[in-house]
Length: 403
Image (cartoon, rainbow, N blue to C red; front, side, top):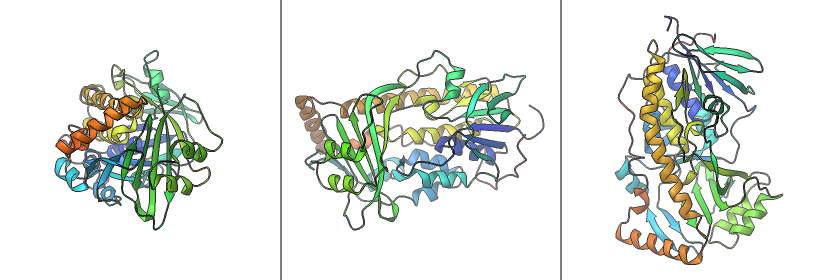
């Protein structure tokens, strides 16, 4: 690599891409971020950031700002549609086990926080990447857009579950596959409505409620459904599926803004890629290891990817060697998280009455015998800490103009 400031192109301005860009910039890289969408995050999206992601964001100096986004510190429960509690956990128990509670925030707020760490002029929206050349030890990588070609010492592909870059690097490899589940998400405002964080499992149905800041509430739901399905009125579809469930589910459905419900088919990658890099290109987040949302680790693993990558890819180093280590560190871990998340997704998708009754009775019994049962699913995940390496918490470097 030349003695000039190395240049990284980050494809995708979601949570993982922005974290990678900020971490690389802080460690001395010039960064350019290309986002295909013309606008920011959809208004109805929330994100869970467990202690592992919070500690990763500590390396950027913003972990405490994310922790301050936590609106709810009380108990949370797993329930049946009747409202009967199967298990209950508290933020204090999570903090004792993992070093902090899970923070659920509005995704747009986290995106704004991370984007604020970038130098002026680094982020370009409405710029889809059409192709990529991964380069090699002697040749820089390049990405092609409708506006032209950019060359880079490193390309970070954070372009999501339908990643163009992943398809180009690993043609013919199994990508994300349908799970048979569809999700709905919405952020609603319900002033004065007393709420407790909860997740409720029914027969092939799941509903979650988490209070946010400023009186807002993040609602999410999943159900078995054929891929590609859409309803003329998604609120009516939620009313049909969940309208008879316990309080406050019906009230939250009625409070959803018209057109404010996001519906997405859930896909995951149970068959991992052979590597999370090729040449000078690194894949991270959903582009590398799409997973079901049941552990709340999709965004968390993307943040982990980003800070590990930035620590390994120090300016002036051997990029190909660094990316080989990145794959060695991240591939086994993310493969295990994908597997464990999909296991829970399958449990929530059961529809047989006898099977669901047995599931619920088992969860309730284990909850009585082991009160922290719900937290055990995050053992070995939420207690992760960033690897030691160069300190990235100092002043930001000056930003050379993109090349």
